[in-house]
Amino acid sequence: VSASARPYHHGDLRAALLDAADTLLDQGGDGAVSLRECARMAGVSPTAAYRHFADKEALLAALAARHFEAFRDALAPAAASARGRAYVRFALARPGRFRLMFGPLLARAPAHPVLLAAANAAFADLNARTGSRDGALRAWALVHGLAHLLLDRAIPGGEDPEALVARLLGGS
Amino acid sequence: VSASARPYHHGDLRAALLDAADTLLDQGGDGAVSLRECARMAGVSPTAAYRHFADKEALLAALAARHFEAFRDALAPAAASARGRAYVRFALARPGRFRLMFGPLLARAPAHPVLLAAANAAFADLNARTGSRDGALRAWALVHGLAHLLLDRAIPGGEDPEALVARLLGGS
DNA sequence: TGTACATCAGTGAACGCGCGTTCACTGATGTAC
DNA sequence: TGTACATCAGTGAACGCGCGTTCACTGATGTAC
Image (cartoon, rainbow over all chains, first blue to last red; front, side, top):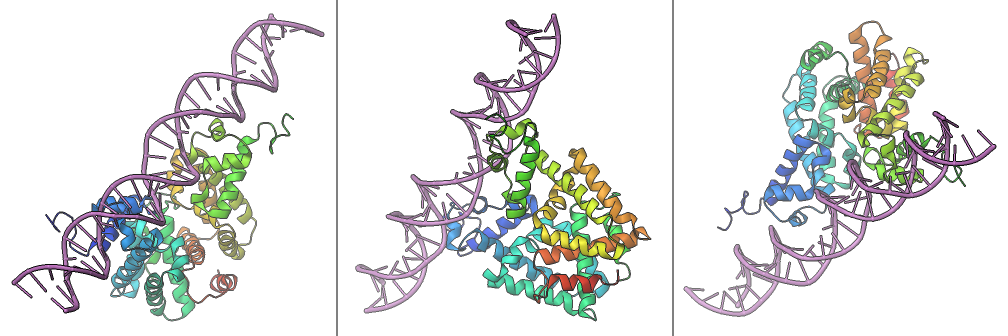
């Protein structure tokens, strides 16, 4: 009746809250994440989260940091030609995460050292691969723009995204 | 005491509401726009907007449509080489508008014919200029990605955005 | 081994907030005769 | 020219909602002697 009454083990509320936030993020996007709903999903009182995070933004920052690390790890092993496709695929598969990571929260990273570090590490990886810095930046912008345009259904024609990406990024 | 008591003239509440939404959008971004605040700014009761828009989304759609038209008109006369720079400059100067236009609302354009038409017209213009369709698409994605990365302060180094854009888009 | 104590994760009530939307209404405008 | 009427833009009260955050608290855990 003690620990097993909760869906998480002793000391893991923090992780449970992040998982809940993740689920909400994937289902309803940025705006669907609320501290209260996370607490509800973790089976805990509305204010329990404040034992683990200073406020809502701190929770989101921790979440974004976690995703930047996973994102970096996922892209690192890919061959240069496949990394662009993987980037876009990630954005299309997990729009909520993508938008959180690259959204307005990013500008507030200086206030959240963990996020700042994770983001910078990921960005450094993205820019380190190819030859010139400007070339890397251009490649990044191209892929990033493609991700956004597909995500927001801005590209007319209703063509299969996967095929389009393969064609546009084929040679890079 | 009749019409002059309001900051708008007879029949112009609709325009006044859109202007108010625009101001909020430019100041606080997407989330800062509320029907109640728009009404407040127009000097009108909280529910007056429903005479002119079916609901909040309809107002936002009308606003986005208006901006797509202006966006298209602003880019049309520019020379091909300058259009990319103008695109990015618009995004940086008016982040709220840019995010509204190219955000999740765009996926709901089919429900708002005016927005759908305006967006498609703008997109057609963007893609019609350059030679091949794929080339145009790539150019668009590059510029769009650059706009987003700069907007979200994702590009490390703190370099002057304007200079960076000029350098990266120089040859296109 | 047993007792006193400090720690601290989680509780629950409460505060104050703003929002979108509905509904019956008022009162000015302009038309039809 | 004057009166009866319909239209319809805007009102204001109300509904129900969920949110972030505070605060004093409880009660289990584990440590020190």
